[in-house]
Structures are given as C-alpha cells and as structure tokens.
Length: 298
Image (tube, rainbow, N blue to C red; front, side, top):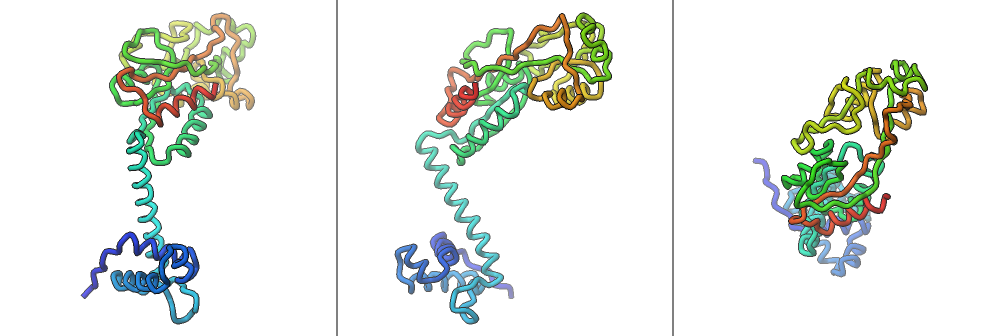
C-alpha cells in the first residue's frame, strides 16, 4: 500500500534550507540561533513525515542530499519563496500599495520608453502585478474612462474628456515613409505634392471617442488599419505610404528598407503624449511612481 506523505511545516522547510545553505547541521544551528540537536530533530521529523531520507549521513561526514532530497529541496525553495512574496504583498497592501496597476499605452509610445519604465517598475514594486493594454488614439482614453486602466499614456484627442486629469510627457516625431520602390520614393524631391494621389496607410480608432476624425491624413485614398505592426509590414512591402514613429523606422531608413519622403503637404509632426487618469480614481503609490518615471524621460 502506497504511503501518504505528511504535511511538513514551514519551519521544517526553513531548517532544511538552512542545513543545505550553511553546509552542516551545526552551521545551520548557529544561523538559526538554535541547538544542533534541535536542527537534527527537525530534519528527522521532516524525513519521517515525508517517508524519505533527505540526507546521506552514512557515506559522508558532511550531510549530502540524496536524490530524493534534491527534488524536495527544489520544492521547498519554491514554497518558501512563495511565502516570502505573500508576506511582502501583504506588507505592501498594509502600506497602501495597489493590489494591481493597469496601464494602457498608445501604440505610438516608443518601445524604449515603455521598457525603461516597466523594468524600473518591476525593480521598485516586485509585489505589484501590472496589466498592460496597447491601443490607438481614443481607445487608450476609453480604457481609463471605463475603469479598465488605472492610468494611460495617450496621444492627442480633438474632443473634450471630462472627469480626467492629464500630464504632458513629451511626444514622438512622426515621419512619412515608403518603400524605396514605391512611386513616391522614386520621385524623390519631385514627390512634394503627389502624396494625395497614392494610398496612405492610416491608423484607425477602435473607440467612439474620435470616430470619424482624421489625424495627419493628406488625401482621399486611404487604407485604415488598427494595428501599427501591420502598417509597418505593409509599408515595407510597398503597399502605400504613411507616417510612422521615427524611433520605430530609424533602422529601416538607415538600412534602406524605407525612405523618408519629402512632402509639401506634410507638416513636421510631433505626436504629443500625456499621462491620463480619472479624477475620481487618483493613482496610488505605485501608479504615481510610474507617472513620474514617464515624466522623467522627457
């Protein structure tokens, strides 16, 4: 009949880790400020509960883990780490930290800025989970308005948004580009007024906030997409022309995969970015720290 193992206590698992990390029962006793006999007794009880020898105490003078002991050790570390994280989480909640931060960002936000902020956030708030949403135009703001996102990094809106507070955090330059074999690219300096005669790839808004509004549209021939990655791929394939965040296409322009167009009907565009949150739901400590991180990048 298969033996059912008992349930070890957290204290027993801590003793097991102390013996392994310290290298001996005596060293573990000093580390835990307990008698060596108490350490031995705890390990004996743990082995009895599990029904497995964890240390080979016969072949070597120094306690060596058995194969079963190494397997149990890995699980013991996972359990104690989980308990440590639980305690840190509860401590943060008691101190007022959010249970979770939900962040919505405009797809135009440069990846380097997003990665910088989230790497630093993880370091400073390891117990606070983060939920990330990436959207375009008014869809970013809509996530804040409906409570899905705590804070948002939003682009420009040509409509008034009540009950929100916004903080400017700079912007990103947009450049008109096309594949080198696209007709506009082949025209070179003579392409200045010809853009309206070719298909322009335009990001569309999935929300109702800016439905029907156009941002930087030059002519009547447009293809509308809700995904910046798809727009990028189509531009590389020579399907239309369009504006892109300069950091995203810098490598493509340098490598000759895309060409920056000289267009007379294109204004030197900076896509403004701002942090947005609801007035009636002010950001907590972690979200406020994230806001300041984005501001500091300016």
